[in-house]
Image 1 (tube, rainbow, N blue to C red):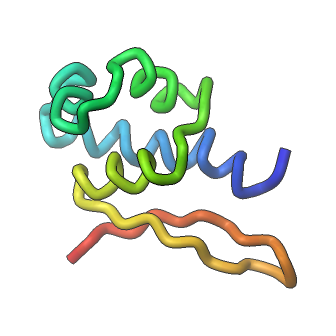
Image 2 (image 1 turned 30 degrees about the horizontal axis):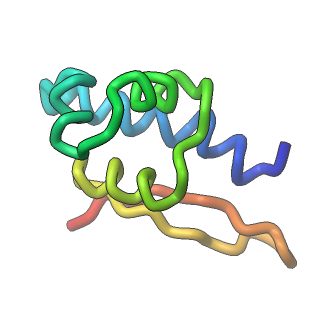
Length: 85
């Protein structure tokens, strides 16, 4: 599995799940805000599936983060998530 896909399936969902909980949001409340299917959001948070990039960006933005693609090697982009100011 490519490194960028592993990041989306492990680190990123953990960060976004922790932030959702910190903000006191349930998965249902966040899914409704984003107009996502709750079961999809739960699977993404657990790392069972990876969201499409456009949904990952919306999910992150809603929680105060920004998704950026950063080249970490000659041709291997890696996804990062930064809090938005």
